[in-house]
Length: 338
Image 1 (cartoon, rainbow, N blue to C red):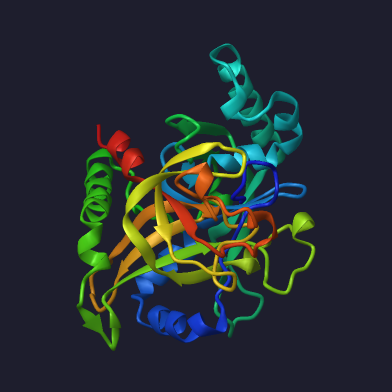
Image 2 (image 1 turned 60 degrees about the horizontal axis):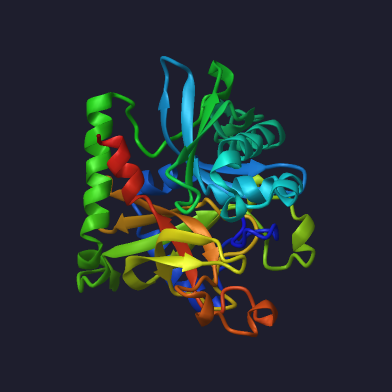
C-alpha cells in the first residue's frame, strides 16, 4: 500500500497515455489462462483509511485455507496509530522487537479485511454470463518472512464453500507439485537477465514482458490520504527494468529494504497509493502453455541505494520521478523449497 514507512499512503500503478498503446498490445497478446489467473488471484486489502494489494499464492481445499503474499510494510502503514507510539522496526531494540511485532500483527488482523473474487457465480438474467461473487474475509494468521528489511509477509485466510477464492497462482497444494512450481518460479528469477535482454519478438513486441498489478488511487483522485480502494480499481501495468540485479535501498525514514528490483518510472507512470504488496509478474507471450511467473511484490517508488543519493527536492518532487521498486521473492522461494 505505501512506499514510505512514515505512514503516508502507498503507491499504485497508473498508465500514462504514452504507455497505453503498448500496454494494451501486451495485454491483448496474453494467454487467456494468464489473464484470468492474474485477475482472479489478486486481492484487495482494506481498512478504515487503508488500501493495499496482494496475491493468492495457493489454496488448501482440505483445510479450507488460502495463502496471500503482500508487503510487510503494509502492517506499519495500516497500524500508523500503533507504530507512532512504539516507533518503527529501525528504532526497536531486541528486547521489544517480538512484542512490538506481535502488536502490529494483531492490529492488522483486527482492522484489515481481504476482498477477492469468489468461486461461486451469480447471474441475474439467464442470457447473461455469470460473474464471480465478490467475497471478503478476515485474516486469520500472519507470517513474517525474514526480518523487517525483507518486505514480504504471508497471510492465512480460512474460507467456506460460499467464500472460496476463484483463483490462485499455483493450482495445486500438493507438496511435491508445489515445490516443483516454486522451483520454476525461482529459476526464472535466477535467469532473469536472459529474459530482460532477449531479442525474441511476438507480434512486434518482446516475447518476455513484465506486469505490475494492484488496486488503488485512480489518476483523477485528489484526496489520496483518505482513499479507500474497491475491486473495481484493479489495474495492470506494463513495466521495464532499470537493471536486473536486486539492491538494498533506503526510504526517507532511513529504514533499509533488501533484494529490491529497480524498475523504470516517471511521474506519469509509477506506483501510487493502494498498490504496495501487489505482484510483479513475468509473462511469456506466444506460447500455448501457461507461462506466468511471480517475481516480486511492489515496495513503492523513489528509493535510493544510499541516503546521500536522495535529492533534496524529493518531498516536493512528483511520486515516481526517480524509480519504482519491487521486492524479489527469491528468498521466499528458497524457504518454500527447503
